[in-house]
Image 1 (spheres, rainbow, N blue to C red):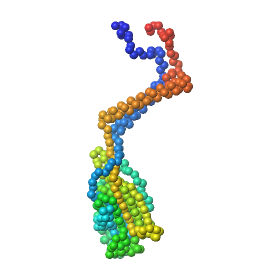
Image 2: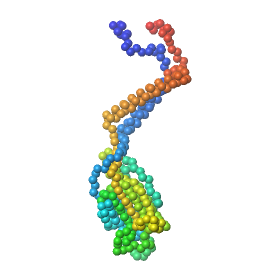
Image 3: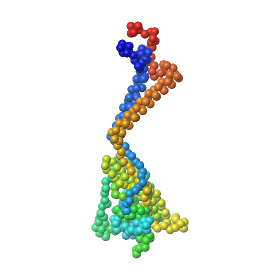
Image 4: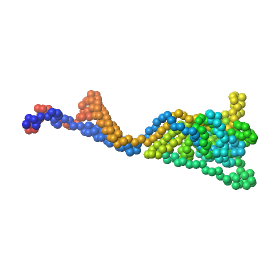
Length: 355
């Protein structure tokens, strides 16, 4: 039994033949600190989740959708026609569905003149914080309450157009033109009154969220040379859904290309274009789904153990590789396992009293 007690199936190197190094301890300490940092970040990811954004085929059937607009046009309201025409050749007169107010034309501060906003996908938190449904206000009667003398002192040379319009969910075009210059009308707008310089305060699709920024929001087009110009906005709409902690917001992002045609410079160079503002819209077959995703606890534990194990395994091999390179190139004094002042003992130098 005494021999069995002294038997060691896994013999180890005697402590007297091992050189202990403080450099190895430092590397171990750094490895442990790095492991704590990774564990801390993984706990943060587990509790905070992560944002998953992916494309999917838009398989939802919708018959109609909504256009929200708020714009100033430098033409009196009485001379404007607003129509919607789609690919089914269905024409809808929408002037009665929108609110038209006479106003003096001006470009508010903070508006990008003859420029567009950058097209970006809003992040999840900003959309959820800004997705407050709203409705446009009713028409104000301040102008109507003014007497003739007060009206004469105001240059009501523009029209404030705002509101929401329900249209067929097919490719189409919203047209703001002068009466008698686009469609037949018993009234023909005088040429000197036509000026399609404009300010777009809001242009969005779907449910109206006034605090979500869109590419054409707060932009303006001002033409001083020839006001009877044609402005075309070609928009491509992508349905986008944001989802977090049970809250679900359906929006419609869009990309836009703009074109400007001057009736004088284009004369004789192609088909005659009707002066006006033309908003073309079409729908992409894909949709974007942005959601806040959280791992289950089991997935989190498996992920954390796998990452920490990989770090430990990689760190051990990196330590050995660096030590081997230092030992081969610079000698044993530069080895990570070397400790100055330590002296190894051989078997013959061993203290007899220990045996």
